[in-house]
Image (cartoon, rainbow, N blue to C red; front, top):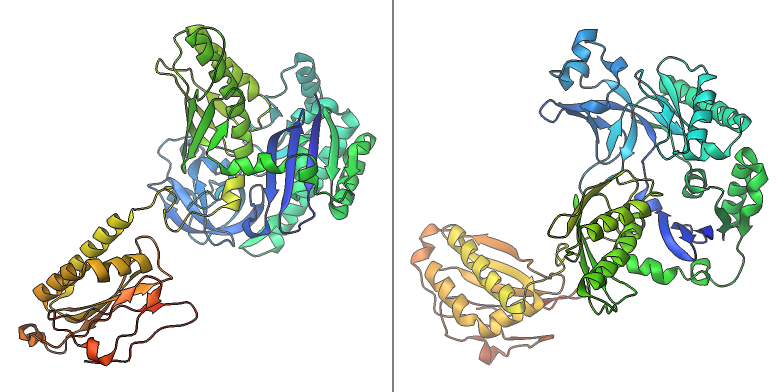
Length: 553
């Protein structure tokens, strides 16, 4: 098995780190200065709001949105106003623990997702190469669940028993610790303790809100968290990041620094390794399978639906075997896509219906097997009779799609827009409702609409508009504006000087003809047209120029 870490850092605006296994992309992370990740950073903030109904507090820590601090993430030693019996009570309230304006040290545990701000905790943890130093309420610390070998777990327990930690602080043995000697573990612990002491000093000397501790950059962070003995190469195309990685290896893994290589070819590094095409597929909801089937992934804020389809799959054998092999191939690809896209929350997978119970169990086992090396916490349920499997997965970072995309202003993320006829009907309805609501107080409305909608209204729906204006004695002006699109409509109203204007009925009217992509100037002879009590005027607004109609009644 060939496993490599590829770092594309030649463009400073965005650093991309890809992990490939057997020449296939299995994980990717990006660092974009415009969307800085805050997960793992430690801040000194202050309480701005306490919501007992939500069992949470909101913390100002120097960001645009305040941090959400749940009751379950508050350490026991912060319960200053409560006695020991109350601490264990289920009736505890947030307002009994914290007060507004109180300074507090928090660490970001979840980055911003959609419209939600970050989620914070008061249980601080500093990850190192082999160990994690953390706060403990007499129950923290231990050995990573990823270490399943009995021998390594026993060695880890022996090492932890030889170390005396201060009260309230504990360590966790990371998976990489199985590859380290005791001297390496002690060195890592020493470095972490120094960082911990620096944080404690900063807490006393700075004023909230302020950043206290920041996670390393994406390159060092990836090496720290993902480098193992099975990684044969780390290839970096930027000299500065290459030197940073070399320095990190000299501190922690001096014997392994030969795996770092500086890429200096003319061809872009991701193109050279064939990763560009694979990364572009992360934008698409459809993923094609080798067999001819395909997967559809639809993501919302808290739920992901994945649909498996057979497509043009052709396997020799029975229908059940064809379905089973398609689902088996899809399960491997789904496990890969979960990591690549960092899909989190509740994930519902709709497999093709299988009759055999053994086949269903094998599909579940395959997903468990393929998610073993996923650093996110995953819980997998059984496949139901109708072929659906539900799993929950922890989000560990902002996904590639979240960083690189924004919601479409036209479709609002639905992927569909109204037909032209529907837009016209909607515009007429809104104009009618607006006039009906305000007609007593206004004598004129100016309506700004998308260009093609305004064109149809003036040329084909003029009679309807005149009927509306006659009914309420309100002049209607229709403007086509290039800057508007979709269902966007803007109304401007002109108030009546005398409410008894409703009794008047003017006969001389002004009408201007409008054609798509062309504004036709009307001659004075043609301008006055007796067609009803309301003038309908349309003009086209451009970004750089505005056409004006200077004729008057």
